[in-house]
Length: 84
Image 1 (spheres, one colour):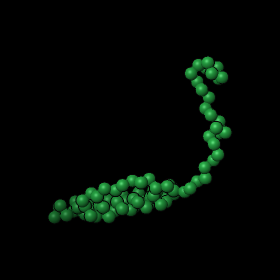
Image 2: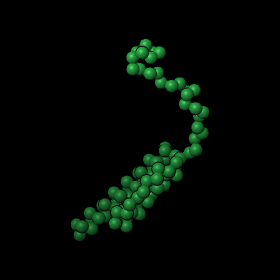
Image 3: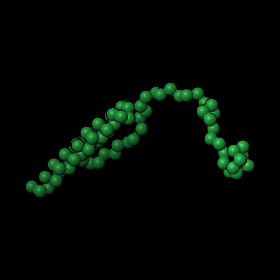
Image 4: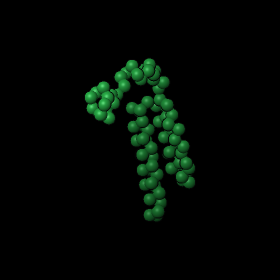
């Protein structure tokens, strides 16, 4: 039995066991590699995703919305071209 009195239950270490607090170094790049899609318009839009690596998390939404808008516009153009 452990010191908690419950067999198999081990108390979680307290904050003192975690070591000294680590200073926030700011955003850290995720290192995501963007593979070319073969469509230059789509590839140009996807490059914007790299901006998220340079921004704090709360600013990622703007980047994702820009990319989504760009992809939607590109797909709409491709669809319109196929209808012609």
